[in-house]
Image (tube, rainbow, N blue to C red; front, side, top):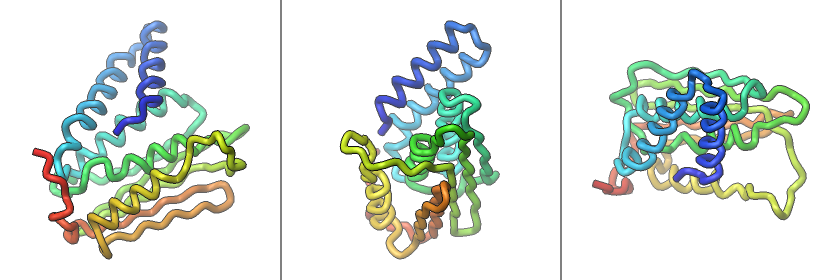
Length: 193
């Protein structure tokens, strides 16, 4: 899925870039095209290479950074040579989207720090971001349903083969996910051919 407001905001940002005749406009259009291709076609596969999932994360990040400009420092670490490491598509994206969505801090520069490491049969994903606790608002669009859905998906695909830790402390929100890639329940994977 792609959030309509993300697509709307991204297209408006690219439009502004085109009006200003910025040289990176074609690259931004290509990144959005790659993102849409991934969402429309690659997510029909039961498993994708971690390398492809990482490219998708990078494209999403580039578009988000364009929207947020200098207001946010983003640091990343991606492993090399992960074509053989397979995971369900769009498993990691919701964590990145949450970091951009909820990582704003009024009056200060905010940050996102994303790291992926791989071992023979394990992936460790971590992301942390600045965070400002807000009073619950009845009109708030955030309900925590995204994290709940991720937990259900992980439990279905990697029962007793994953660890998910989510902590919030002193203005920093952290997610750490560890997957045993050889323990995925293949019969739970959707057949989308």
